Length: 234
Image (cartoon, rainbow, N blue to C red; front, side):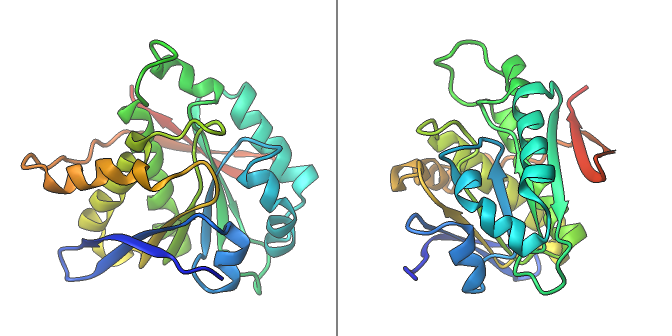
């Protein structure tokens, strides 16, 4: 397998560091099989996408039917659900490589529309920051995730450097607030992400005005036996 390339290390208040890197030549299966991922955060986009490319691996590793469970939930979260929601699918396989996957919304979902003023706007920080924070928080605090892999949370070809910046900003805040839950690594993987998309992360590091976590309300419901986390800014 190709090597993961490091971007930066996030230092926590207890001295722990979380490595952020990328490996665009692989997807979740390869990372998990080599011990470099124990949770996958993936867009709800189906077809020719990281979710579509990983469907057989997810089904086998999690012991969750793709056609009966994963696909319908992904389709619902992308096209029908008006709430900003994370579908969290915990593994049913004690011998699996992944602890679970999180189906996360992006700028190609129905729930994103209230955050978009025009088709040419930059990605909404409110949306992407809190989606990232709550996905990382759930994976780390409830599943004990140590090595998180994430693909593009956007339509194919629609990734933006601000999305990557929001992911890393949210992770840094989580590591600061919950040092005992901080993961060992976050790896960007798959298609549609390029090295240039990480340019905003260096600006975030260099900023003299340190950002702060913005808490929102999160409530959980069960849908088809699966936990769904709804995010609310009200």
